[in-house]
Length: 79
Image 1: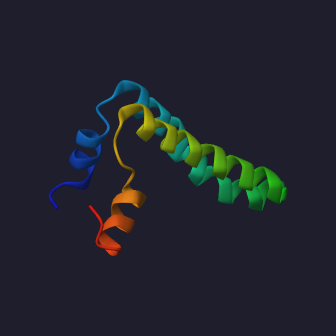
Image 2: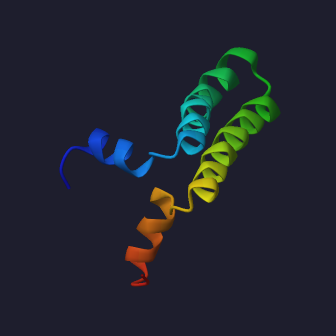
């Protein structure tokens, strides 16, 4: 598998995809603490969905598959 960070950078060379991930990944990680601190479940869910959506849009823009899609394809034997 090699270096996961180097692999990530290799798969996210498109500048638009890269920056959508730079915003989307932290948004997903902020969602759980937001739920604990603010106690507004809808806000935490909205932050998580928005962050995830940004990452998926990044893959659509770059024309690449997300890690989740690649995992599911391997799991079900599809290429």
